[in-house]
Image 1 (tube, rainbow over the protein chains, first blue to last red):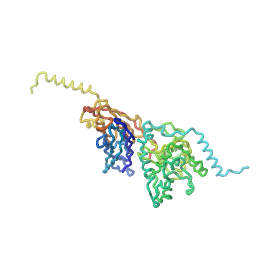
Image 2 (image 1 turned 180 degrees about the horizontal axis):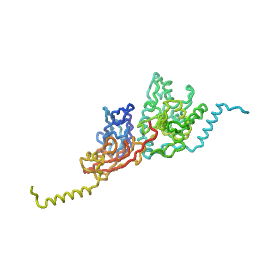
Image 3 (image 1 turned 90 degrees about the vertical axis):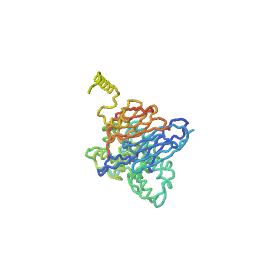
Image 4 (image 1 turned 30 degrees about the vertical axis):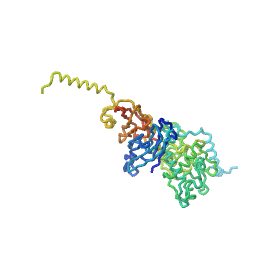
Length: 106
Length: 258
Length: 145
């Protein structure tokens, strides 16, 4: 389980557009870099990210080696109703992690 | 009377003189001020700072029971926000058992051995960096405040001597860049004053969190000198001097630096 | 082969008109631009028009390992892709905005191997393709491992 840092505003007014920010610990090894022994380190990156609110898509991203280590993604959500936000990362070597957070809309 | 001054007295006077020179210099400037607005935002926004991933790991480790004693840091120290506030601001500190200065990383390992019966964590390991970052983070915003400990005067002076000594194939001293040319440019980058106020830092070059010792070793590689080994006496002495030199500067742990 | 009267002139006019049209269309890329193939592969052959999408990057970067990037677009944009010119691979990322999105705006951090051009490509609700480009200078940190 990689460490994640997810920032969701504590309370949101109905209809407001808010920024969601996510950080995840991951080396995003490009597959182009040589190790200390001179041999190329195999690629190990996160390839997909998606954020859903009660299952409906908010935002998704296809990531490539050009995305920096410990990937940061900030994107916007239109908050119409309270619900459960899910954040899912998938990547090489079977990487799969989902985190959830509550969205409180007043 | 032609009695020669005792070496100890001479050393103490030199240390005092060095102290006065350091104290008389202009207020120290943090490296954060030389960074682009985007990188400053990366450090200052807790939703954006990648170093906080390690701080979070350290927070989890703080409450985890470990070692033969099956105790956590919290077992003795309680809530870190209260008990560790100000701790990083006065390290390296004198340790009676060691008979000399130890840095925060060594302090953590000694606590693990004595309080938890747990094995020492390797220097530069994610586990140790996480704990160090978490502890130092509790002092974020507080000024660096090295204790005026007479027992450390010799070590501080040795650190200052290391700082002004020319080394490496490029035959440069720390002072030549970071005192005499701070604010000027080396390549595309502004030369910082080189203060240890944000460690452990998330260095973009490392794409990861790292210690002051790692950064000092990078400096030595930069002038083509053989870097001191992790945990070397010289690196502790340098840190002691650097903390004196940076006294008053606010701690930024975890800082972001290029 | 017999040709219809005037067809040769018509062909010549058509060829000339085509040439003028080619020259008059907004020039997205120079002929040998390494980004061109990647962008056109993404759009399915259509050269995007300039506009609608915005790419923000610092003009001077101290370390290419972590470069803050903001990409945004006006209107009902469903997809934005970002491409680079000089990394080992052209793709940077592809972003898609779902029904719950508050707008097409993403902030992330990318890697740049050297000074180069970045291009963002967006498709709007009508299927039109748009693009914007930015040049970035990448320097190296001093005193590395």
